Amino acid sequence: MKFMNRRKSKRINKKAYEISVDWLKSMLPEEEISKIKKPQKNNLIYDAKGTARSIPSSFRGAKRFIKNNCNNKNIEDITLKDIESGKN
Image (cartoon, rainbow, N blue to C red; front, side, top):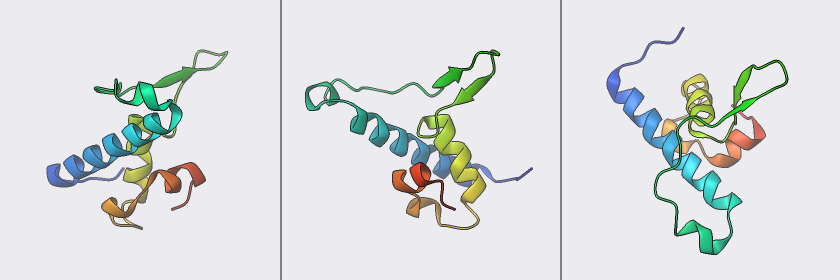
């Protein structure tokens, strides 16, 4: 388990929110982008067995990726492309 202070946690949450908004904007047509106010923070997919899994580019998925890789890279340097490719 990784421990972190509140400052680092706030930076991770802010970056995960930015990535999830960018991901959502890339999925929508131009006229729908202006309607985005605040995306949901828990985008989950349930499989046939009822197990919940988060979408990698959603807020929760981005937050998990950043937490696991913040030792390898600076938090501000992580992008949506890094998450989509699964790079560390």
